[in-house]
Amino acid sequence: MSKQIQYSEEPIGEIKLVSDFLPSPEELALKNKQTKVTISLSSESVAFFKEEAKKHHMQYQKMIRQLLDEYVAQQKRR
Image (cartoon, rainbow, N blue to C red; front, top):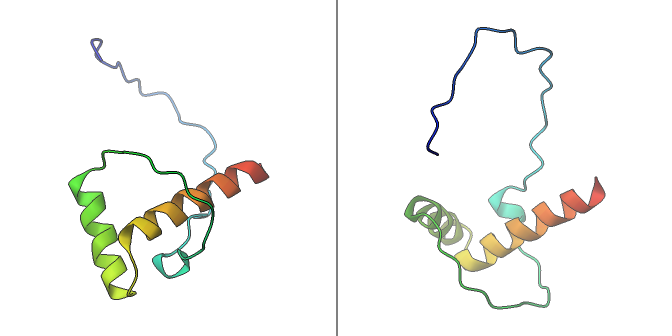
């Protein structure tokens, strides 16, 4: 971004709370047809998924895959 953002003191308006639609780590386990891809993720995200996967005795890649699948399913329902 080359331009600096200019903020104003205007009212935000009505705020709408959105419920958390993402699944918990415990819910991230389904088998689907898979396509291999290469992706760069932040170290913090990978560390989180590795830690959660270890707690639930599963692979961290599987948890990430299921999270993305759940996100896609939610978007398709809109």
